[in-house]
Amino acid sequence: MTLAIDMTAERNKNMTNSIKAISNRLFGFIKQRVASTEDAEDILQEVFYQFAGHAEPIEQATGWLYKVARNKITDNYRKHKLPLADDIFNSTESDEENFNWKEMLLPSDATPETEYLRNLFWEELKAALDELPSAQRDVFIQNEIEGIPFKVIASACGESVATLISRKRYAVLHLRERLQILKDELLNY
Image (cartoon, rainbow, N blue to C red; front, top):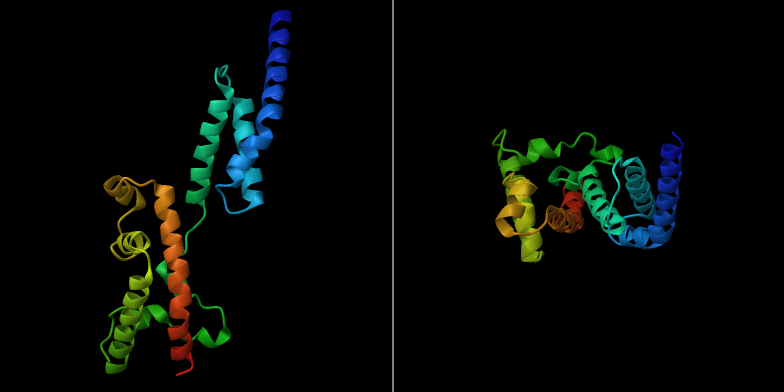
């Protein structure tokens, strides 16, 4: 019994020393790869929580901590909902409440006015997509328009899922800004 208590105390001391020695470097590593300081702090806490709860001894604690941190960063990317094409025309103003973008853009009816607006939108979207770097344009088209999951795209092109998610995010931000002009013109029409 005394031996078990001594081993537990020694394990806690080793764990505390490991955490103190690496926490600043690990925090910097995480912070460079996430959007906010709060996310980095949360991930660091999760990493150390997993470290403290690990039942078996860890031979290479530093390597293990960085590996867990990378996994937690990836989980963080997956957890945050990325903006979709629907978000390009996100309704925020009360004037827009009666304006249904999906009905206008999806081919549910075929009036001359809706056909004109659809064509106008798709022409503007194509022009905006042509302004993007090819890597961003390709991942946006494959994921958002063709509906191909990120994992499938990643295995086909050899890029990581996180890289593809980042590229799509930049594409959506550009498209949102670029198509805002069309949105404003149509709402004031």
